[in-house]
Image (cartoon, rainbow, N blue to C red; front, side, top):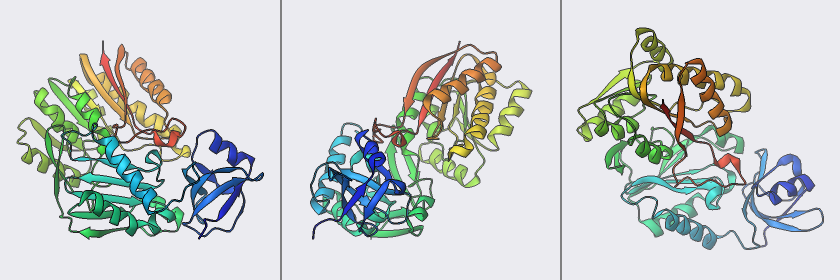
Length: 387
């Protein structure tokens, strides 16, 4: 059965010609497609632009899959997944917790696949990938023979597609704790309840980089389950890991025990309050890690997010000893790298500290960025030296 056609207007065609992969509902001229179908995309003059996933609920009406006139069938999905695995082989040597498939960047929009040891976690975030979920599971079983596959389909974005939020087992068995390797560490992941699909895999290479600079007394803020703290700990005298979540710190304690770390202590506290208290008390550190959650989840939050980022960076810069290092991140897509750099610069001026950037980093290479699609570039990380 031939795939249905969707006709887009000039504005939508311009987006696709610019390299972007999304077309919004306002740019659709006509369609007879059903939600979740793969469709042929044409402009009003009949020019072919590619094949896309169609949504009858989301404002993102079309997600371009391929610019070639080929069917988006089982063979296509299997080859895309196999290609993504080949791409990652040199990126993840010695690593067993990483992103295996990154949606638009790997040419199956809205599909996320993460590996944790012998287990896979998937997210099908649109009508189209959700309808193909069993087919995707079959491909994963054939190509990787995992012991279990879990769906972490609890992100709120699924509601925009008219899909329910749920977490369920799709294949085999997945235990409540999975231990996988990252940066020579063994880390425990809760795939059912942990952040994202179980952990923050996108910071893996930034944690490795941070360990090159951290020394002496280190403060790890928004520490979560302790991945930064434990990666840094062999190079530090002591690491204090701070988080507001008792459950996250419970996970951090478990990781401390697994890795026999003796120089990491945990503190349950609000980072904003603690930085202010330490500043007023005259505490000093040789390195500080800031890995906060996304402060700007939409454009309306940008101003407030800027204030929050400036506050924690300013306080941290005041707490650093001369020749100390600040490892600071933003995972807010709406905070650009240029804006984040400006925030840090203003914080340094107000803190009366002279600083230099020794590294400008982004998400791990298993989360590849499409240059023509800024939505795929969200994580910014600066390693700052206090001169």
